[in-house]
Image 1: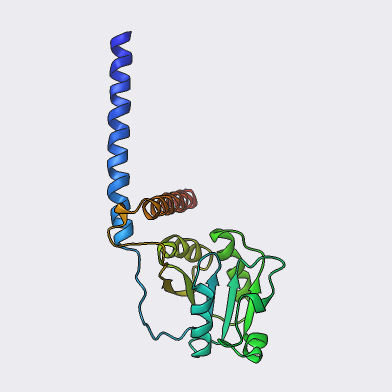
Image 2: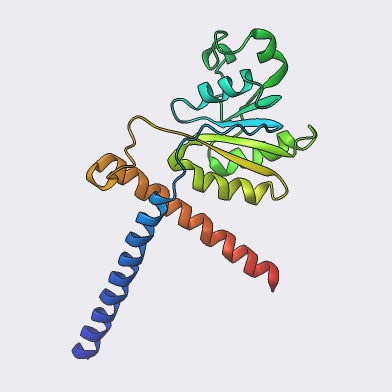
Length: 202
C-alpha cells in the first residue's frame, strides 16, 4: 500500500512539474507576443478606451482630435465620475466631447467592457474599432472583444505603462507578478472559448 501511495505521489509530482514547465514556457511566449506601441495611421469608425491604466484616455483623446475615428467610447467609468475629470478641454474641445464621446458606466471588468461595447456599437453603424488599453492587457482584451463582436474589425492600440518593464521583465518582481496573473487570466479565457466551441459542435 505504501509503495502504491509513493508511486502515486511521484506521478502527481511529475505531472505538476510538466504542467509548471509548459506554463512557464507559455508565459515567456505570451510576453514576447505582447504588442508594442506603434504609430499606425488606421482610421476606424470608433475608438474604444478601457479605463484602468494611465495614458489610455489621453491616447484616445489625441486620436479623436486627429480624426482617426468619428466617435469614442470610454468603457468602465465610475458612476459619479464627470467627463471633465477624464478629458481635458486642452485635448478635445467641449463641442467634440458633447457630440462624439460616450462614457460607459456599466462595465467593471474586461468581459463587461466587451459586452458594453457590443451594445454601444449595435445601432451606430460601426464596423471597425480601435481598442485602446495597456499593452500587456491587449491579448486578453482581444479575446473578449473578438468573442463578443465576431464581425467587427478590431485594431489594437497598445499603451505602454511606465511601471511595467517588458524588457527583462523576469528581473522585476512587480512586473513579473502582474504578467503572470495576466497570462493566467488569458489562459482561462482561452480554455473557456475552446470548450464553448466544442460544446457548440456537439
